[in-house]
Amino acid sequence: MRSAKRGAIMDIPAPTEKDTPFKIGDTLTIYEAAMVYAGRHPYPHFFAVKNSSIEHHVQILRLGLSVYSRLAQADRRVRAQAQRSWDIYCELLRRIERGRIEPLKTVYASPGKIDLRRTLIKTSDLVCLAQDRGEKPRYLSVFL
Image 1: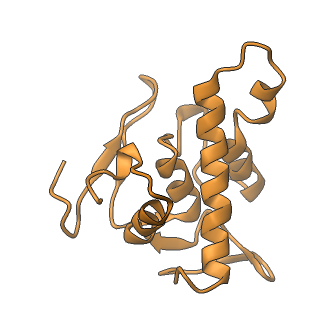
Image 2 (image 1 turned 30 degrees about the horizontal axis):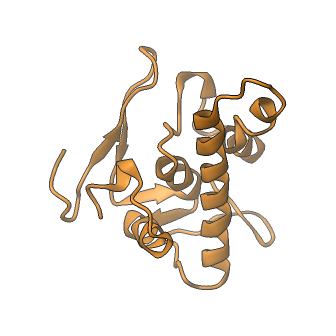
Image 3 (image 1 turned 180 degrees about the vertical axis):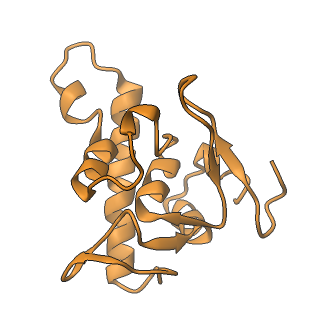
């Protein structure tokens, strides 16, 4: 792990032996930012392909909400992470729409619909969101 200066890198550990750590650098896609904020690895091996559909990315963001909400013995940590990743995704979109975050690269999936897979934001924008919320996400600690 390097210092919190420009080019700082933090890794989200590989969740299984089939995965590799996810490096957090100066930029992230909206999808990656939401997952990192929640402490989730954006591309676990079961994800298959980074370039999969928007719907697949949204499913992964929400993975743990609908499935676990129906179970009596729900894993609260998994549900909390899924809820947080979804909440942060929605907040990032709101901030972009309101001009509070200016993406480095904006890609639209369809007219007016931002592509969460290809739109890039600065990691510092995600850090600002954490500060505004009064939170200290684990994998952003090197940037805070």
